[in-house]
Image 1: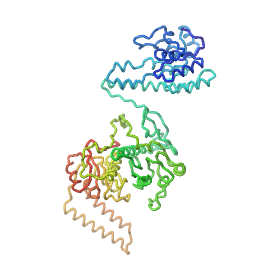
Image 2 (image 1 turned 180 degrees about the vertical axis):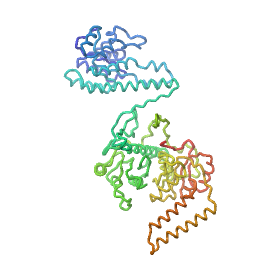
Image 3 (image 1 turned 45 degrees about the horizontal axis):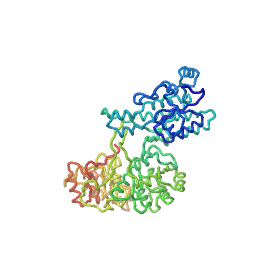
Image 4 (image 1 turned 90 degrees about the horizontal axis):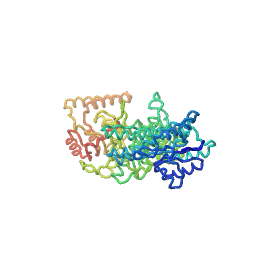
Length: 604
């Protein structure tokens, strides 16, 4: 079949029929003739759109159960021909028309696989060959004027560009972008099929597609610049970092990584409250270098939650991050700007690096963003966290040298579905504080022990090689932060391997006590009026304390009991589980022993 010289042709073959009739009518008004086949041609004719069937051009009907329709030199020659005298002459010789527009979208193969996973024949029948071939040809030829459309959302863009055009062409930039979308679609399409066939062969193949979002302020260390944020293609999580709007500053690599970590804690804590308490309180979490350094909640006052988080460790929070599930208004902005004058922390301002909230007031943006040059990010999804469940994630990936590790995400924390393993039941308010300690503990660098009291995190001992060091560090940090750990609740991400230690013999204790008395006398002598040297006295006492610490071989469980803890939560595992259980029970602590599989190690 021959067309008039200079006649513009549009080849339409689409799976998504919505809007295709209007698109075809618009092309007709612009002087195009429509070429189509199969279901698309029928759809257009049903709405009285004049259509030239592909078969009239090729001289061949659809054959082999419709497997071969457009796979013909007169179709693909018309798609791939350059706008050159040589190619024009060759087209004329063989009666090949030129296609100016190729609008093709294909059957969503992932849907086919999902519906027919066990039926290889069904999946293969739904695997498109002609559509991808036309798209690839048109995308290849975009530099020669061919317009290719694989996304229904781009149809209007092309029409508007054509309506403004004086020569019937669209810009090279638009054609290039449309071509990119084709090859991007084809990569994902082919990946879905290859993954499916790999599975059928008993192999595991994964492909991750990432899309660049922005360049970050600087890398983990500036000698590693540049650093960038990428978005996982297909991600639907409203709390993903790319979904946060930047109001001030540009986050660094560290700030972004740390923000992701404390958002994760926020999400799991909100989820734990919703499941175990039926609602979600106001929550604020502070982080530093990948681990939380403050966290608190309050059912009535967001200000109290905010203060509880930032006063958890006033030293560590300098240069840290804060995330809230409530808006930051002017009052809360002031709380984040400077500490209470009645609670001196040794500096004028908090010096936070990054603040994330559902909303941030304009005055706070001016105060913290413009004046303090802090990074401020907002995402309304944080406020709706009490109405949203955890995102559906199939796998969690972590990079290692030369590859990736893969595992399932951590499940929701539902104590009601776990065995009743209480040494002694705790009340609802104590349970809430324990949940806070647990979520912080689970998503800090292992090994970890966390302490919380009165809705507030007191301290975290994380990243240690053994359980004793975790507890010792946790208690030490709480002490240095000025907290009273008596009647606090603890959480441990791993089990306690031993209940009690082997006590030193009487002779060791006698000599140690004798040395302490001597040190105390020496320190006191330094404080007499004749020898006022308080620094020397302090140094003597510190050395004495170090001697005590060296002889302190208590196990972690013993240290928590001796510190006056009220209860906690710990995985029920280890050869000495019965002894650990009995120790806590005899000491009167309210401890929940999680089933062994709920060990909370993280960040390996």
